[in-house]
Image 1 (cartoon, rainbow, N blue to C red):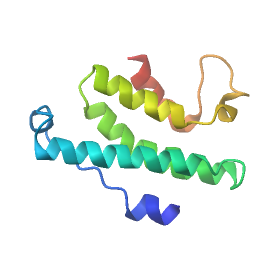
Image 2 (spheres, rainbow, N blue to C red):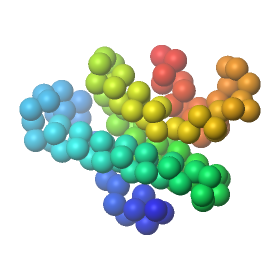
Image 3 (cartoon, rainbow, N blue to C red):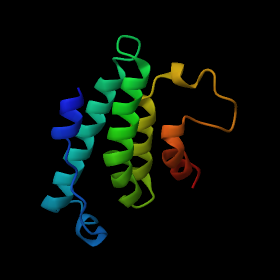
Image 4 (tube, rainbow, N blue to C red):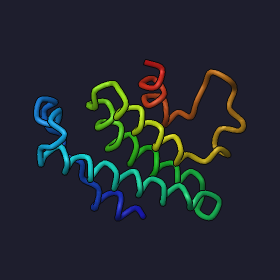
Length: 119
């Protein structure tokens, strides 16, 4: 899993003007790479309970979400596409990780993502 996260994930960042045209090849490529990384996130977090939680959280949240996915989400204009991306990421996260968290707080690895959701 670690090798896949470190070597196989690549989401290019293009200027917003380039990817605003959803029919452009760059936009389509960037979107395919993003959804591929979301699928990998989903697969990584499925190992929760089998592999040590700290390892799964490091790979899934610190490396995949914060290093790759969040950059793409932050560069996606606010609107339905951004909401869909955020929803898919949230759907990947195991509920168990949030059981012992007080209201109004979150996992340390999710601070930046949470701030984006609040905006």
